[in-house]
Amino acid sequence: GNSVTQMEGPVTLSEEAFLTINCTYTATGYPSLFWYVQYPGEGLQLLLKATKADDKGSNKGFEATYRKETTSFHLEKGSVQVSDSAVYFCALITSGGSYIPTFGRGTSLIVHP
Amino acid sequence: EAGVAQSPRYKIIEKRQSVAFWCNPISGHATLYWYQQILGQGPKLLIQFQNNGVVDDSQLPKDRFSAERLKGVDSTLKIQPAKLEDSAVYLCASSFGRQETQYFGPGTRLLVL
View 1 (cartoon, rainbow over the protein chains, first blue to last red):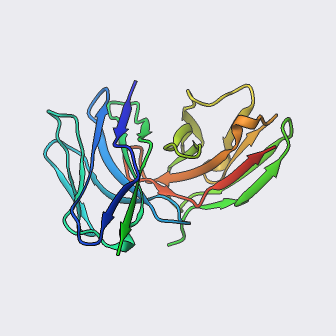
View 2 (view 1 turned 90 degrees about the vertical axis):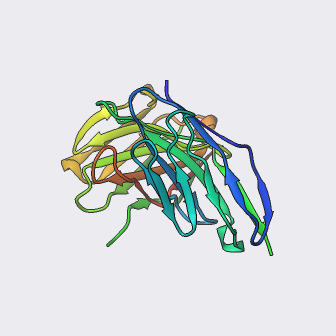
């Protein structure tokens, strides 16, 4: 079956540090890839997405590149802020008729001033 | 644009009781999802509707869980009878199409005692 593996959290950083959250996947078909974010007390919301190999999704200073050869979609940000503290979920939706969404466990990010 | 609405926000019941959750998706969204999110884990898809038809319910415990989407709009998810392990947050999401961005509601937090 399909699966998404994220690095364990929490990830604790100081403000302005560089962020990487690793995400790898296994999937049948050709999936679309997503990063969702859940801020404290709020629901999940889309952060960015990519729908084909080598596409780069970006939003709010975050970026992730769809790497088909390594089946990865790592999330990066050059300089994190305290307001980025949240839980980040990597997800995929397969194509080819099934369109089943699969989420990773989530990675908690804590940014200190 | 109004977001995905869910009610109730919180529910506490005893095991073997029944409970129902309601979801109103974003207007015009054909695809509706119900997820179960256990503490510390990512959302797990329970059931997916396309308009008022079920397109996937492979992970729905059908001996106790049921869901319907009347007229292709609102949806209800029911648990009867509840077990302790059903304690979780139940998320509803909707999207314009099956491989599109999902928009999540705030969730219903269920505690089974």
